[in-house]
Amino acid sequence: MLLSVIIVTWNGLCHLPRCLAALLPQLPANAEVIQVDNASRDGTVAWVRANHPMLRLIELSHNTGFAGGVAKGLRAARGQLVLLLNDDAFVEPGFVVALLDVMAAHQEISAASAVLTFDHRPDIVASAGIRLRRDGLALDAWAGRLVTELPHAPVEVFGPSGGAAMYRRSALDDVGGVEPSFFAYLEDVDLAFRLRGRGHRSLLVPQARARHIYSASAGQGSPLKQRLLGRNRLRTLVRCLPRVLLPQLLPHIAAYELMACAYALLTRQPHMLAGRLAALHELPLLLAQRQVIQARTTATA
Image (cartoon, rainbow, N blue to C red; front, side, top):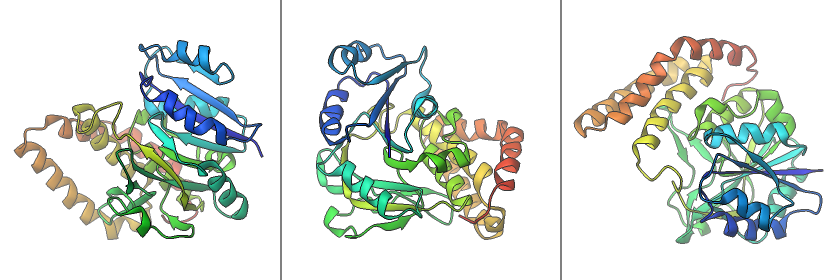
Protein backbone atom coordinates (compact mmCIF):
# COMPACT_ATOMS: atom_id res chain seq x y z
CA MET A 1 0.00 0.00 0.00
CA LEU A 2 1.54 3.30 -1.10
CA LEU A 3 2.30 5.88 1.58
CA SER A 4 2.27 9.60 0.80
CA VAL A 5 3.96 11.95 3.27
CA ILE A 6 2.96 15.62 3.20
CA ILE A 7 5.20 18.21 4.84
CA VAL A 8 4.22 21.88 4.67
CA THR A 9 6.97 24.47 5.04
CA TRP A 10 7.11 28.21 5.53
CA ASN A 11 10.56 29.59 6.31
CA GLY A 12 11.32 26.36 8.12
CA LEU A 13 14.85 25.70 6.91
CA CYS A 14 16.09 25.81 10.49
CA HIS A 15 14.04 22.66 11.23
CA LEU A 16 13.52 20.83 7.94
CA PRO A 17 16.95 19.13 7.64
CA ARG A 18 16.51 17.53 11.06
CA CYS A 19 12.92 16.56 10.24
CA LEU A 20 13.91 14.80 7.02
CA ALA A 21 17.01 13.20 8.52
CA ALA A 22 14.82 11.45 11.09
CA LEU A 23 11.97 10.59 8.71
CA LEU A 24 13.46 9.46 5.41
CA PRO A 25 15.37 6.37 6.64
CA GLN A 26 12.13 5.00 8.10
CA LEU A 27 10.02 5.21 4.94
CA PRO A 28 9.14 2.22 2.74
CA ALA A 29 11.02 2.16 -0.55
CA ASN A 30 7.94 3.11 -2.58
CA ALA A 31 6.79 5.97 -0.33
CA GLU A 32 6.48 9.45 -1.79
CA VAL A 33 7.32 12.64 0.11
CA ILE A 34 5.47 15.76 -0.97
CA GLN A 35 6.82 19.03 0.33
CA VAL A 36 4.50 21.99 -0.08
CA ASP A 37 6.34 25.27 0.35
CA ASN A 38 4.35 28.36 1.28
CA ALA A 39 6.54 30.92 -0.52
CA SER A 40 9.45 30.63 1.91
CA ARG A 41 12.13 33.30 1.76
CA ASP A 42 14.84 31.50 3.73
CA GLY A 43 16.21 29.28 0.99
CA THR A 44 14.08 26.24 1.82
CA VAL A 45 13.27 25.43 -1.80
CA ALA A 46 16.87 25.73 -2.99
CA TRP A 47 18.08 23.55 -0.12
CA VAL A 48 15.54 20.82 -0.89
CA ARG A 49 16.43 20.82 -4.57
CA ALA A 50 20.12 20.53 -3.77
CA ASN A 51 19.89 17.96 -1.00
CA HIS A 52 16.67 15.98 -1.60
CA PRO A 53 15.83 16.10 -5.30
CA MET A 54 13.67 12.98 -4.92
CA LEU A 55 11.05 14.94 -2.96
CA ARG A 56 7.98 16.06 -4.88
CA LEU A 57 8.21 19.81 -4.40
CA ILE A 58 5.14 22.02 -4.74
CA GLU A 59 5.98 25.72 -4.69
CA LEU A 60 3.14 28.08 -3.85
CA SER A 61 3.14 31.75 -4.81
CA HIS A 62 1.91 32.90 -1.40
CA ASN A 63 1.49 31.60 2.13
CA THR A 64 -1.66 29.47 2.34
CA GLY A 65 -0.96 28.28 5.89
CA PHE A 66 -0.70 24.72 7.09
CA ALA A 67 -4.27 23.90 6.11
CA GLY A 68 -3.93 25.32 2.62
CA GLY A 69 -0.63 23.56 2.12
CA VAL A 70 -2.04 20.21 3.21
CA ALA A 71 -4.99 20.64 0.85
CA LYS A 72 -2.58 21.27 -2.04
CA GLY A 73 -0.50 18.26 -1.05
CA LEU A 74 -3.52 15.99 -0.86
CA ARG A 75 -4.49 16.86 -4.41
CA ALA A 76 -1.06 15.71 -5.57
CA ALA A 77 -0.78 12.63 -3.33
CA ARG A 78 -1.07 9.17 -4.88
CA GLY A 79 -0.98 7.02 -1.74
CA GLN A 80 -3.76 5.05 -0.11
CA LEU A 81 -2.28 6.16 3.22
CA VAL A 82 -1.36 9.77 3.98
CA LEU A 83 1.04 10.89 6.70
CA LEU A 84 0.90 14.54 7.76
CA LEU A 85 4.02 15.75 9.53
CA ASN A 86 5.03 19.21 10.69
CA ASP A 87 8.42 20.39 9.53
CA ASP A 88 9.32 21.09 13.16
CA ALA A 89 8.46 17.54 14.27
CA PHE A 90 11.26 15.00 14.54
CA VAL A 91 10.18 11.37 14.53
CA GLU A 92 11.67 8.85 16.93
CA PRO A 93 12.93 5.42 15.77
CA GLY A 94 10.08 3.08 14.85
CA PHE A 95 7.61 5.92 14.27
CA VAL A 96 6.54 5.05 10.72
CA VAL A 97 6.36 1.28 11.14
CA ALA A 98 4.29 1.65 14.32
CA LEU A 99 1.66 3.68 12.45
CA LEU A 100 1.70 1.40 9.41
CA ASP A 101 1.32 -1.71 11.57
CA VAL A 102 -1.71 -0.32 13.39
CA MET A 103 -3.37 0.77 10.15
CA ALA A 104 -2.79 -2.71 8.72
CA ALA A 105 -3.99 -4.54 11.83
CA HIS A 106 -7.09 -2.35 12.33
CA GLN A 107 -8.83 -2.06 9.00
CA GLU A 108 -11.85 -0.63 10.80
CA ILE A 109 -10.07 2.62 11.70
CA SER A 110 -9.50 5.56 9.38
CA ALA A 111 -6.76 7.49 11.19
CA ALA A 112 -3.89 6.95 13.60
CA SER A 113 -2.48 9.60 15.90
CA ALA A 114 1.15 9.69 16.96
CA VAL A 115 2.40 11.00 20.29
CA LEU A 116 4.01 14.44 20.16
CA THR A 117 6.44 15.27 22.95
CA PHE A 118 8.24 18.51 23.67
CA ASP A 119 11.55 18.69 21.87
CA HIS A 120 13.32 19.90 25.00
CA ARG A 121 11.45 17.38 27.23
CA PRO A 122 10.85 14.18 25.25
CA ASP A 123 9.65 12.50 28.43
CA ILE A 124 6.61 14.81 28.59
CA VAL A 125 3.56 14.44 26.35
CA ALA A 126 2.59 17.55 24.39
CA SER A 127 -0.25 15.86 22.51
CA ALA A 128 -1.51 12.32 22.17
CA GLY A 129 -4.42 13.04 19.91
CA ILE A 130 -7.43 15.29 20.44
CA ARG A 131 -9.94 15.20 23.26
CA LEU A 132 -13.09 17.31 23.40
CA ARG A 133 -14.55 18.98 26.48
CA ARG A 134 -18.27 19.52 26.94
CA ASP A 135 -17.79 23.25 26.28
CA GLY A 136 -16.54 22.35 22.81
CA LEU A 137 -12.92 23.14 23.61
CA ALA A 138 -10.53 20.80 21.85
CA LEU A 139 -7.50 19.89 23.95
CA ASP A 140 -4.35 17.86 23.49
CA ALA A 141 -5.01 14.47 25.08
CA TRP A 142 -2.61 13.46 27.86
CA ALA A 143 -0.85 16.85 27.62
CA GLY A 144 1.64 17.37 30.42
CA ARG A 145 1.69 13.72 31.42
CA LEU A 146 4.77 11.55 31.44
CA VAL A 147 5.24 9.37 28.38
CA THR A 148 5.40 6.40 30.74
CA GLU A 149 1.79 7.12 31.78
CA LEU A 150 0.45 6.55 28.28
CA PRO A 151 -1.44 3.32 27.56
CA HIS A 152 0.70 0.55 26.11
CA ALA A 153 -1.81 -0.52 23.46
CA PRO A 154 -3.65 1.63 20.89
CA VAL A 155 -6.73 3.39 22.27
CA GLU A 156 -9.46 5.40 20.60
CA VAL A 157 -9.20 9.19 20.55
CA PHE A 158 -11.52 11.86 19.19
CA GLY A 159 -9.04 12.46 16.39
CA PRO A 160 -5.34 12.75 15.62
CA SER A 161 -3.22 15.83 16.07
CA GLY A 162 -2.52 17.06 12.55
CA GLY A 163 1.14 17.61 13.38
CA ALA A 164 1.83 13.87 13.18
CA ALA A 165 -1.05 11.79 11.89
CA MET A 166 -1.76 9.04 9.39
CA TYR A 167 -5.06 8.85 7.50
CA ARG A 168 -6.65 6.53 4.98
CA ARG A 169 -7.04 8.46 1.77
CA SER A 170 -10.50 6.99 1.28
CA ALA A 171 -11.64 8.53 4.57
CA LEU A 172 -10.20 11.93 3.69
CA ASP A 173 -11.95 11.82 0.33
CA ASP A 174 -15.19 10.80 2.04
CA VAL A 175 -15.30 14.00 4.11
CA GLY A 176 -13.68 16.40 1.67
CA GLY A 177 -10.22 16.54 3.23
CA VAL A 178 -8.77 19.44 5.19
CA GLU A 179 -10.60 22.77 5.00
CA PRO A 180 -7.99 25.10 3.42
CA SER A 181 -9.63 28.34 4.56
CA PHE A 182 -8.69 27.61 8.19
CA PHE A 183 -5.10 28.62 7.30
CA ALA A 184 -3.70 27.16 10.54
CA TYR A 185 -4.84 25.79 13.92
CA LEU A 186 -7.83 23.56 14.64
CA GLU A 187 -8.12 22.32 11.07
CA ASP A 188 -7.38 18.89 12.55
CA VAL A 189 -10.30 19.28 14.99
CA ASP A 190 -12.66 20.27 12.18
CA LEU A 191 -11.46 17.24 10.22
CA ALA A 192 -11.89 14.96 13.25
CA PHE A 193 -15.50 16.12 13.70
CA ARG A 194 -16.30 15.40 10.07
CA LEU A 195 -14.59 12.01 10.13
CA ARG A 196 -16.47 10.94 13.25
CA GLY A 197 -19.70 12.26 11.81
CA ARG A 198 -19.26 9.81 8.95
CA GLY A 199 -18.50 6.91 11.28
CA HIS A 200 -14.71 6.98 10.91
CA ARG A 201 -12.67 6.22 14.02
CA SER A 202 -9.14 7.09 15.13
CA LEU A 203 -6.62 5.31 17.35
CA LEU A 204 -3.70 6.67 19.33
CA VAL A 205 -0.50 4.73 18.64
CA PRO A 206 1.65 5.16 21.78
CA GLN A 207 4.73 3.64 20.13
CA ALA A 208 4.79 6.29 17.38
CA ARG A 209 6.48 9.32 18.90
CA ALA A 210 7.90 12.56 17.59
CA ARG A 211 9.55 15.52 19.27
CA HIS A 212 7.91 18.82 18.41
CA ILE A 213 8.88 22.49 18.62
CA TYR A 214 5.56 24.18 19.32
CA SER A 215 4.45 27.37 17.53
CA ALA A 216 7.69 27.56 15.58
CA SER A 217 5.93 29.35 12.71
CA ALA A 218 3.32 31.68 14.24
CA GLY A 219 4.92 32.11 17.65
CA GLN A 220 3.56 31.00 21.01
CA GLY A 221 0.75 33.33 22.07
CA SER A 222 1.18 35.58 19.02
CA PRO A 223 -1.72 37.82 17.92
CA LEU A 224 -2.03 35.81 14.70
CA LYS A 225 -2.28 32.52 16.58
CA GLN A 226 -4.86 33.84 19.05
CA ARG A 227 -6.94 35.31 16.24
CA LEU A 228 -6.91 32.07 14.26
CA LEU A 229 -7.73 29.98 17.34
CA GLY A 230 -10.74 32.14 18.19
CA ARG A 231 -12.02 32.20 14.63
CA ASN A 232 -11.45 28.53 13.87
CA ARG A 233 -12.98 27.32 17.12
CA LEU A 234 -16.29 28.98 16.27
CA ARG A 235 -16.01 27.92 12.64
CA THR A 236 -15.59 24.30 13.69
CA LEU A 237 -18.47 24.30 16.15
CA VAL A 238 -20.90 26.00 13.77
CA ARG A 239 -19.95 23.74 10.88
CA CYS A 240 -19.57 20.42 12.62
CA LEU A 241 -21.26 20.10 16.02
CA PRO A 242 -23.94 17.39 15.60
CA ARG A 243 -27.46 18.71 16.09
CA VAL A 244 -28.30 15.96 18.59
CA LEU A 245 -25.59 17.33 20.90
CA LEU A 246 -26.69 20.97 20.70
CA PRO A 247 -29.12 20.93 23.67
CA GLN A 248 -26.50 19.28 25.87
CA LEU A 249 -23.43 21.29 24.87
CA LEU A 250 -24.67 24.72 23.78
CA PRO A 251 -24.97 26.18 27.32
CA HIS A 252 -21.40 25.14 28.13
CA ILE A 253 -20.12 26.52 24.83
CA ALA A 254 -21.88 29.86 25.41
CA ALA A 255 -20.46 30.10 28.95
CA TYR A 256 -16.94 29.46 27.71
CA GLU A 257 -17.24 32.06 24.95
CA LEU A 258 -18.53 34.69 27.38
CA MET A 259 -15.59 34.04 29.70
CA ALA A 260 -13.12 34.11 26.81
CA CYS A 261 -14.47 37.45 25.57
CA ALA A 262 -14.41 38.92 29.08
CA TYR A 263 -10.82 37.77 29.51
CA ALA A 264 -9.85 39.32 26.18
CA LEU A 265 -11.36 42.65 27.21
CA LEU A 266 -9.79 42.65 30.67
CA THR A 267 -6.34 41.75 29.36
CA ARG A 268 -6.63 44.03 26.31
CA GLN A 269 -6.12 41.32 23.73
CA PRO A 270 -8.23 42.54 20.80
CA HIS A 271 -6.96 39.79 18.50
CA MET A 272 -8.86 37.20 20.56
CA LEU A 273 -12.08 39.11 19.92
CA ALA A 274 -11.21 39.81 16.30
CA GLY A 275 -11.08 36.12 15.49
CA ARG A 276 -14.50 35.50 16.98
CA LEU A 277 -15.98 38.52 15.22
CA ALA A 278 -14.56 37.23 11.94
CA ALA A 279 -16.36 33.93 12.47
CA LEU A 280 -19.63 35.72 13.26
CA HIS A 281 -19.25 37.76 10.07
CA GLU A 282 -18.99 34.46 8.17
CA LEU A 283 -22.08 33.00 9.84
CA PRO A 284 -24.28 32.76 6.71
CA LEU A 285 -21.52 30.89 4.88
CA LEU A 286 -20.80 28.68 7.89
CA LEU A 287 -24.47 27.78 8.27
CA ALA A 288 -24.62 26.83 4.60
CA GLN A 289 -21.54 24.64 5.08
CA ARG A 290 -23.14 23.16 8.19
CA GLN A 291 -26.21 22.14 6.22
CA VAL A 292 -24.05 20.19 3.77
CA ILE A 293 -21.95 18.57 6.51
CA GLN A 294 -24.90 17.63 8.71
CA ALA A 295 -26.80 16.17 5.75
CA ARG A 296 -23.97 13.66 5.33
CA THR A 297 -23.56 12.90 9.04
CA THR A 298 -24.34 9.30 9.92
CA ALA A 299 -23.04 9.20 13.51
CA THR A 300 -22.73 11.59 16.45
CA ALA A 301 -19.25 12.74 17.46
